[in-house]
Length: 274
Image (cartoon, rainbow, N blue to C red):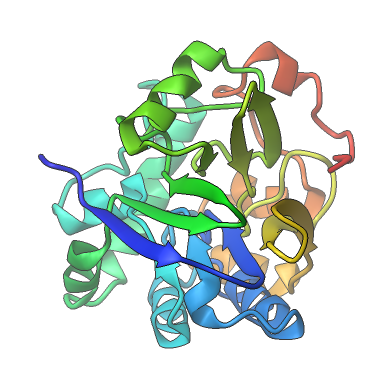
């Protein structure tokens, strides 16, 4: 299938980037408040995909996001829901703990989204491009060529370089892997704002987003997102979603590290210095 790229043209002022809302209504409400606090208009806010996911309020989360009016690209979850598939397409190893958990939360999300949700997913682009602070920027979910590719800070630049070439940009903003980071190589910059719906395996309950600013050229700053995780946990438990993921919201520690390279595994429980 030919990928759809939406070009936003030249953007100015502060921008808010984030990913992985994961059906966490309380997290998206906190991000909307964060945008208002920094006077960032919805049209300057971009989600890297996976609005839907692990938590307990998929329809309420989607409605809130749509009513806000921010941009989003397709995550693998939206693609699977749009195409009426039976799994999340996250690229978890078959038979792994994450694979087993996904059977539960994906089925719940699919059963609790309205029929019009697929119509919304069908209009989302695969990628977004824009110009900002003198840089050409592309927004992807996993990578430009593979929506479910796990790209981490420790990932080889041979894996990263193809996305820059595909979108003809010098900055990539990506999601999917669940961990915030910045990584540069020569004149190229790979940014992951982090996800807002789940902690970053660092032992803290807050999640992460990113603010771009062009007031002095180009700057990118990671911003902690504090939200009502106790209410999010209650909705997960009330809907019999995996208790292991509910515990992650409470402890900030992932249930397992199956997807993580060794370098990122060693960071578990260590507060991020971003």
